[in-house]
Image (tube, rainbow, N blue to C red; front, side):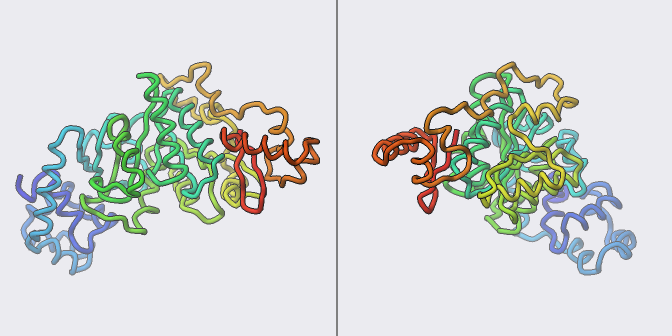
Length: 376
């Protein structure tokens, strides 16, 4: 394929120095497709663009294609020829329709896996990479319940909440062919797994869901790219659920983008003592819907559900289990052992043994300062 045809022309445009999304949209407004731009004579190009973009960009567009870009085009076309790999451009009829509604849709999308998931009904699930055990459990249970209801989960393949949401959705997908799956939007080239600890999870997502990136092959993990990819996470979904978030966090950026895109925003409340609940409480004060179960989300998305209807038990796994005994004495805020002994009436030895048993079964977690917190 010539470097000025089809996907190759889009890659060449995206790799042109000085051409970002905004400039590319201006150029496409004039020429329609990148191949039309590169087919224009230098005189015609200058005449069409002299009032639209700086001279340095016109010069860059007229410059011969670099060997580096030629190599990238060849590698990308080879990658796209492999089973399960696709490259979508803004001109493709299969480009995800919801992304076309956001202010700055990506010029190109690199997709690995089941690309047919992209137009489906999805909920973004995001939160802290430094999540608590309860936050991880909530993310997994909500994603599992949404999957059972036929919805896909979109997240960012980060540690913590993201990874838990992907795992919950994959579990639901494994249970039934009618269940939803998961979509991972990454901030690197699609041929790179970041963080490396999620390599096995990425392979599972590629096999049963799909991975999406707007970045060229070989793009490393650059800090600025991750907040930018958040608009795709929210853009692919009808709503965004924030599970845990500090007062200043990337998850709040995703929630803000969802709101600006006209999508629903949901937040799970937490303890007033937890720093990771402050972001969620902030969102709720700003109008996000407080949710306690997946049913609360499905209720808001009823107009979009169509065939994705919850089975009677689909939302129950996201509800907290009933508690008794020592768990009831714990309550839902962190508490120290002395206070717990007073509440439960247990002696120190019995209390210590029961706390250890509850910790080992995953019902409580031990926090810094000798505090205990209930997880179920």
